[in-house]
Amino acid sequence: MNGKTITKALTIAGLTGTAGLTALLGAAPAHATTTESVAYVRAGVIYRSAGATETRLTEDALNARPRFSPDGTELAYLHDGKVWVMDADGANKHQVSDRPAGGPAWSPDGRSIAFAALSCTGGPGVFRVPAAGGTTEALFPASCRDQELPQVAAAESVSSPAATLVDRLRTDDAVAWSPDGTQIAFRGGECESIADNCLSIGTVTTGRERAIDVYGGGGNGTSGFGVVPAWRADGKKVAWTTYAADGTAVAVTEANSDGSGRHAVGKADDRELVYTGTSTAVLTGALNGHSWVTAVDLSTGKRTPLHQGSQPTVAP
Image: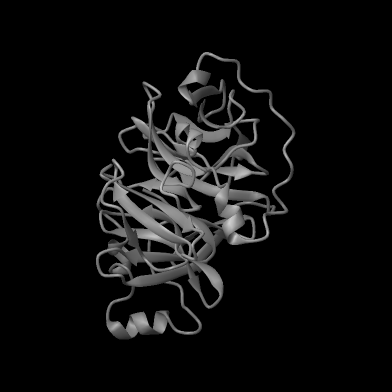
């Protein structure tokens, strides 16, 4: 968010004064007052809000993983499992890729969109398509770059999601493009040859991959997964949603961009973090038995529920 962060209207991450924060976190949370534009999903519908004002952007309930373009004027998202783009006010919806995909990510220059889909190897891969639509090209694995693209198979409707949150997240293929445009973080990769599940960062120009989170097999021996990566705007930090099958709850892990310095941020059951500054973020948290898009000060732990929903993205 270019250093402006959610502080400019939330006094990060909440109202001014302890009394205001206490009232906000009560049994019936109020909406925070913020001029920041946040888009999110509730029951398969994409909404956008700035403070208490909420605008419905999609007509049906077959949508997921919205992501603001770098200039904030458009949203890439999944509609019935494929990548679409619309204006930030919900107008001009159009499909840009015809293959079943994971959550998309914009290139920093706004010209391309990356997404995960079935690769030439029969496993997951990462592709790039012009934001206006056009020719799709393979990025990862690098061995697929000179191969024919896999045939597009008929996709099942996304109207019947997996039964549990953990099951839905386990195969979530949302990707994240680094702020400098040189790297993409994605679930899977070459590390799956030795691990049950892993999270990788790949270099766009060379196709080289490195794993930053590994589970099972020849990895860390723990069953679980890491999904839904996000980069901090300065490129120095990466965060992602983690789950370990040893009883650990779904949570958010943050690390340096090389995977070192791993540590948990937020609370148990937090997920889907997106940065809004060097020490602020918006994520999906749990509140009163529901998922809430929540602003978080990562340095103090203060939290501000914004709207009921999940899968947040914040306009720059």
